[in-house]
Amino acid sequence: MPNIAFINGKWTSLSSAKISIEDRGFQFGDGVYEVIRTYGKACFELKEHLTRLERSANAIEIALPYQAEILEKIIQFGCRKSRFKDTMIYIQLTRGTAPRGHAYPKKKRSTLVMTFRESKPVSEEIRKKGVSIISTEDIRWARCYVKSLNLLPNVLAREAAKRAEAFEAIFIREGHVMEGAGSNLFAVFGDKIVTPSLGPYILSGITREIILRLGRENGLTMVEGSLPLDDLYVADELFLTGTTIEVLPVICLNQKPVGSTKPGDVTLSLFNIFQDYVS
Ligand SMILES: Cc1ncc(COP(=O)(O)O)c(C=O)c1O
Image 1: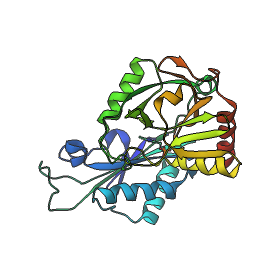
Image 2: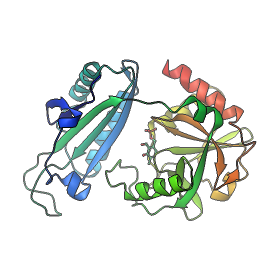
Image 3: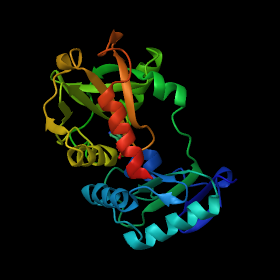
């Protein structure tokens, strides 16, 4: 089963895929990205991901080289070609290749790279047990709704989590929760399920949006508001959402137990509701 790549219109094996060292994505992180997964042959929320890609690209004035409908077809072709059971699609769009200089180059020719690999789910063992998280100061820029290639704060935060044997790091700004380095966070307080409202420091996660909608459709009280870090210590349950992790229970925050230290009922019920939606 091959890992394959698509580079500016050409298909290649992942191992032989190459781009110039003068690509601005490599030189400046001057680009945006998306991560999409399939369940079987079906791309999950493909339109929503491509809309977000276009929004990110517009925000930094990079033109998408294909219309969304064409991109959809290319992605579906790639999934068939790679023949995995579930596929993880990574899309990276940069401002293209040009001699190094910070301002935009005169010649506008973006680079579009897509890779297709096998999607590996979170193990049953981790999902059943729940994960630990840490909090970390949010040192990111004020346009986190753009899915930018500049991920250095996220890299540092995830490394800090890894060193603390935690699964995720949660960005905290002025005492308030923003989001994880690669996920959104929800907290359960009695019958209320709270997640930070969208703003400059939060990516509108596709999974976050689905969970808010499915929760409401199932009669749960889903609240978008402010979420102080201190409140997380008294939450009944915490969980993370994201494309690869889906709905993942959190049982420990900064080495302190969360709720009953077992994945909670609300989290499990939202996980099951999400699975029904997926299937
Ligand atoms: C910073 C950040 N927040 C949230 C998410 C979750 O978004 P989604 O549910 O669309 O995967 C991601 C996913 O990559 C992310 O990088």
